[in-house]
Image (cartoon, rainbow, N blue to C red; front, side, top):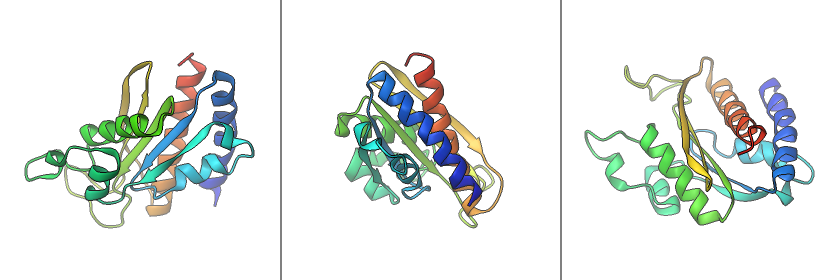
Length: 168
């Protein structure tokens, strides 16, 4: 799978950058179902910089595992695929892991589940670190389920790489 290979190459650079900066990474994943952690742990030596993570596929798991506020999931609320949710996922993972950085991903990989406001391919990614405010971005990725998930992993790793190279 080309997307995974590209993510592994990027993961090598991220693991090296984490090592150089003395930082450790945790992840909280929803729509990627562990692909982000898998990309990082495919790199030999990643155990020195990767502490682990959570696959929080359901709203209940987001709430119980990393402390996302249950009010985000009620009627008229932002929902699981939102800036508020992904930022709480990243902050909860940062707090619970003891790592210096945490990446979180939530989205709609498809083929079903999209709405006019949140079509298939809508993904939120957040990066939390103890040194600055949470960075989060919304993406609208194109392609099938595998492609959306792969692009999500690549963008999360890219966000972290840019943060680390900028001195974060």
